[in-house]
Image (cartoon, rainbow, N blue to C red; front, side, top):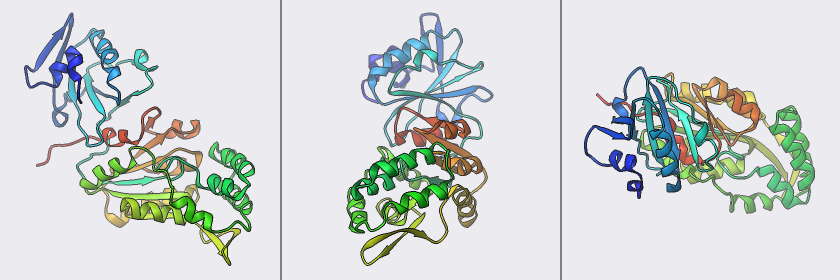
Length: 326
């Protein structure tokens, strides 16, 4: 939150001065997150770069209505301004800012300080890569596998069929490439901080992946996740067999994971969250109480309750609301 004083509105908002403020003809009041004005539209403007301060102030000052503002604090460290208003706002003038996103917070948004469930996709969501594409590149069959992966992500191929077709390309590859990739698995920026904050509030965290068990098990251990599900790669005599065994973790399995884990841990209605990036995540996004599309393919983005398109996973806790305790 440093350098908020570069902007007159934010200087007032970050101070402990009066409850109201005027900038030209625009008037503001302040509120705290747990006592926002009821019955109003509620938006959160998030950004990671203080170069966005002045454009955001210009936008707020240009509104011809009273706005109630609050600074929203999370441990992941983005700047977040909550804006409450009687009439809906349009944000076209902020849409082109590359490091800024706006979200509407509904009254039934998940509650951060109550136990919840987060089920995550792995490839291109929890981590920055598609594991099967990386394994294929290491095995020398990268181009052939990447083309099939993209078709599957776009929802143009049946997932199980595409999975088996891609894995078949890995036949006779040295199994050591799995350990090599685990050792350099790139976590998605913001993942560790967001998981840490959720766990502080007793959330359960799960990864359900159409990828492979060595990688989800590595993530589970690294992040202290509560459960991890993925496909089992068959290995014979130190070589990949080009097949998977057991139940395939497909779109329906992911949706079932949300339901089964919520029952297992007694997660209350409204607190089941799923996040993913591809067509294979649509079913779990739909069955969750709150579905998040992360830098997602169009079909998934259309199904989600919220879409993170510019910033990273540090956004995640800001999509939830704090409620007064007691």
